[in-house]
Image 1 (cartoon, rainbow, N blue to C red):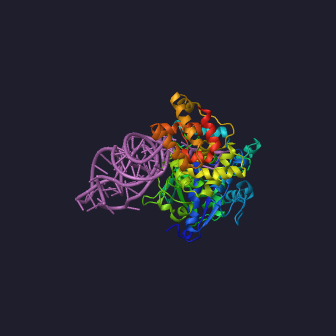
Image 2: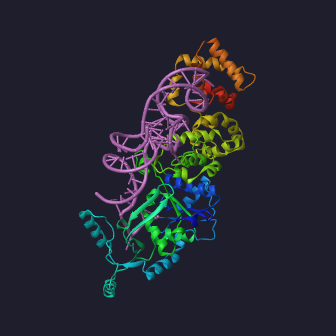
Image 3: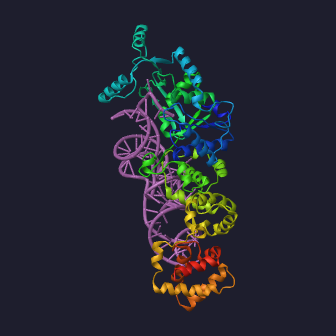
Length: 489
RNA sequence: GGCCCCGUCGUCUAGCGGCCUAGGACUCUGGCUUCUCAAGUCAGCUACGAGGGUUCGAAUCCCUUCGGGGCUACCA
C-alpha cells in the first residue's frame, strides 16, 4: 500500500483559497468539507492564504475570506489570526522558503532556467495548435550551453525556473475517483518561479503542503490535472511515495446552465447570501448536500452532526447544480428551528439596517412579542422588515394595490361597523378582537370571513398580506388600530 | 484538437447484483386546513443517456457510443 505512512499520521487538512474576490459558493463547499473532515477525524484544520499572485489577491479579499469563514463557524486550528507551529500561513510571507527550494531544485537538476519570452512561447503554442499536437513547453531551454546562456543574458533576458518533467507517467489514488494516471507527454515542463523571482502556485502549494505536514488534500476538481505537477515537486523535495498527502478532488458546484457557478448564472458570493438573510447553518447544511449525503434519506443536519457523519467515502464524483429554491427551503426550516432569543438576535440587525426601528427598549419589547407570529412565515431574515413594518412606522400608508380593494362603499361600511364595535371593546387582546369582529361582520353582516377580514387587514397593516390579523391588532394597540380603520372610512 | 473527470426524477440525492413495479428532499400540480401569507398535512407528475455484453438475475460489473465539464498560463 503506497500511502500507509500518511494514513498513520494525525490528520491535517487545509483549506487554501486564493482570494481574488469574495469567497463563493464553490470555495465554501470545499472549506466546509475540509473542515468537516478535520473535525470528523479529530485532526487539524489549517487555513492558508494562497496569495502568490499579488496582482489579483488583495488584502481586502483576504480579510473578507477570514470574516466569511468565521461567520460560517468554520473555525481553524492553524492559520491567519491564530497562528500555529508551521506558519506563516500567508504565502506572500513565505517567499524565502520557496526561493530556497527553487534554488535546490536548480542545483539538483530537477529544474532549469528557461529564457524563452512570452512571445516565443505563444508562437510555439500556436504552431502546436495548428499541427494538432498536445500543446505545452517544447523543452527548448532544457539543455542550453554556457554560450547560449551568456548570449541570452547579454540580451537582457531574465529567466524563469522551469520544472523538468521526466519521461513516463504519474499515477495516484484519488480518494473519490480511484486511480488516476497522467502520461507525462501531456504534462509539460512547468514554471515554478517567475522571471521576477516570485513563486507560482505550482511551487508554493506543494512546498507548503509538505512543510505544513498536510495529510489530506480535499480540493476542487479543477486541480485534478495539476496533481502530477504537484507530485513532481514532492519528488524533487525528496519525498517517497508513501509520504505524499492523500488527494480527494471534490466535484464542482455548478450554476443552472451547467457551467461552473459564476456571477452570470447565479449569485455566488457568500457575502451576498449573508445580506439576503440566510443563516450560516442553512448555507452549510445545503452546501453539505451538494456532492455529499449522509444517506438514510436524511437531509437535515446541524454543524455538529455534519462533523460526526462526514466521510470522504460518501462524497460524490459527479458535479452538482446549485438550487436557490432548496437553499431557501432549508433556510426557512432553520429559521423556524431558532429559539425566540436567537431569532431576535438574528432579526434585529435586519430591522435596524432597514431603518424600521432604532433599537429602543420599547421597540425591542414590542418586537419580542411580534417575532413569534412571523417566525414560521419567513424563508429569509431579509423578509422580516417588510412584514413588521406596520408595527413601527411613524407615517402609516396603505399600499396602492391594497387600497384599491377597500375603496368601494361596501368596504367602507364594513370598516365603519368594525370600528364602532371595536371602539366599545373593554379589553384589547386578540381573542376579544376576533370575537367582536366575527360577531359584527360575519354573523351580523353575513360576510365571508376572508372578505371581511381582508378589508380590516388592509386598513390596519396596509397590505392584503400580513401576519395573523387579530394578533397584529393586539400588538399594534387600540389607538393605532382604530385610527387606521377610521382613516379609510 | 489532446489529456483527464463525470452521467439515477426538472434539481440535490438513496442505491454499491436479487430487498427496485427505483426510496427521500426541493420545485411544480391538485386536495385538506384556514382571517391573508406562510406553516402543517394528503395525493399526483417525473429518472437509471443510448447500444452491446457478463450473469439465473444489472441502476448496480465490462466495452462502445453519445452527452456534459475541467485542464491545456510567467492564474489558482
